[in-house]
Image (cartoon, rainbow, N blue to C red):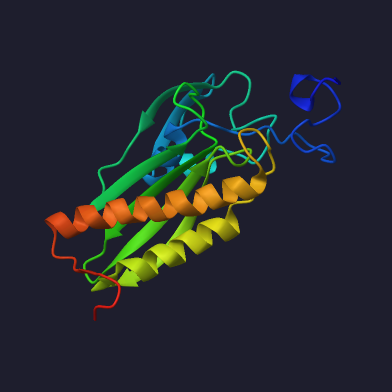
Amino acid sequence: MDTCLKAGGAVCHVAKAGKRCYAVYSADIAPVLLLLEADVVTVDTSGERIIPLSRFFVDDGLKANILSAGDLLTSVRIPVPAVEFALEYIKIRPRESVDFPVVGTAVMVRDRGDGIDISLAFTGVASWPFMLDAGRYSKPLDKVKIMEHVGRLAYEKVRPVSNRGGSPAYKKRMARVSAMDGVETCLTFWGNGTDIRVLDNGEG
C-alpha cells in the first residue's frame, strides 16, 4: 500500500481521488468546546495569544489547527454562559471498546426568553470539527417539528468522506438520529425545569 499524504506520501486512502489529505478528526471534546464558545491560549517567542476555538481548527487532514512550529497551547478558557442552556453529546461507535467516534454530535439549546436557539457541532465526519446553526424557535415549542427540522439539517450538511466505521450514507443517517436525540434530551431538560412549554405532536 502506498504511503498516505499525512505520512509524507502521495495518496489519500480516505478519498482515493482526492488531491489533499482527508484524514478524519475524531476528538470527542472539540464539538462540546466549540458550542461553549471556548478560547485557547497559546504562547510563542513573541508572547501570548488568545484564539477563539471557532478559528483554531482548519479543514485540512494534514494540519488540523492553526498552530505553527514553536507555538505551545497552554490552556483552554470557557466563558460563563450569558443565558441558560442545555447541552448533550452523543457518540456513535461500532462497539463500546472503540474509543473514537464514528459520528460525534454535540447539541446546545439556549434559552432566549421568548424562544430558543439550537446549535450543533460534529466530530468524526470531516477533517475538522465544525458547527452548524440549527435555527431559532419561538415558544411554546413544538418538539416534534423542531426535532424533524434539526435532523434534516444535520443530514443535509454532514458530508462524510471516510468509510471507516461505516459508509458515508450510514454516517449521515447517524448524524440525523443523534442530532434529533440530542435535541429531545435538551428539550426534556428544559421541560422539567423551566417555563418553556414543549408541545407534544397534535397539541396547540
